Length: 299
Image (cartoon, rainbow, N blue to C red):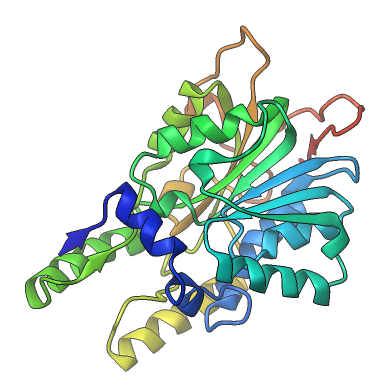
């Protein structure tokens, strides 16, 4: 099995006919799963029409369009030209093209000054980097003080994370040429990366205790259908989890972090997320002061 290094990952994701062929969270088989990420943002992230937003690694632009529909000023960046062309076309279809600027760029070399944006989101990106701390640090630099970073990652402790390890070992045994494109993390690892970047984890939400979508995993037909059935059933009952004790064991974790004012240190994850029940938000963050570009948190 081959695990791609940073240069190889960038070459893959920037090349035509690669990720654009299999990554389809809006129209694909697993739309039912990925739409829960937008549900989390809709119910837990209050944005203002004056907010400036950077959607890094925008892909086909689903989150950029979500912000644009709320009248935010959005900059959407991706390394892959094909993905950006699709994102532009969908922005036209949704009649928000005038509120989104599309830029082809590597996340490591974004053409922006520090403290430019009120919100930075980077979804399904940390799964494909070799150093998440480096990426989080760079993205946090573009945030204004008290701005918010929204990220997702696949949890190593989840059932999917454990099954993925078994799948990779079997793939390596039967197909030594198998290419591994992604990584999993723990919530504590992401929290540590956030704190070292001067940020505080304010909220975390988990999607799917039982299963997760498998775009590039070749499973027997009946196993794939069984996992999909279990996932659909669970998400009908529980679209996402708020309980601190359950979040690390969900397949996909959505994290909302806030950039600390200068000279303020971040608290560890155990103190920054409350342990309330599943009917309450994982944080009680106070809304940001009312000013141009301010962002508040729903509770």
